[in-house]
Image (spheres, helix red, strand yellow):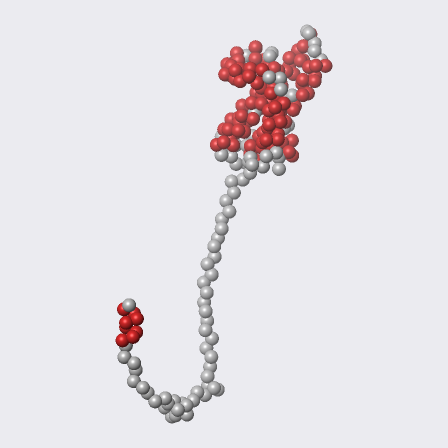
Length: 212
């Protein structure tokens, strides 16, 4: 209201007679002396710097660490029978493995548990892009470890001595396989709990080729 009132109430300017175009008081412009001054428009360009931060495919958060650490129990449970000689010789091994005995009994109670865990890890974890590469790599290492147990198993089936040097060789082979699985379990699980990437000998390169 105030703005419209001010506009309507302002007195109209007095009438002035227009000046002629060639009047002395209104000189005509000289086109030759006119110079056009270019208008320089300075534009400020705002540069936005984007810093891309990548955690990397081998980094892991809490759930990834837990899943990866649990994967290494799978080959150890499958290879526990190879420790039947060395566990009886060293009491500290019995103390370390005793908390795992209930889980081992549950795992061994059903003969197809090994196959089910293998299929689950390979198709639901390793081949699942929803999991990070960290989880898929550790799962694949655990699978390769379990596959390697086929060779001592075949050797035991074809070579079953009852005594003598043959039995000593078989005991040494079984103990070596068990210790390798046991060290792989400790190293793999402990590294995963710290968020580090464990690379086990023999199996790491094979896992790399399967995990893209």
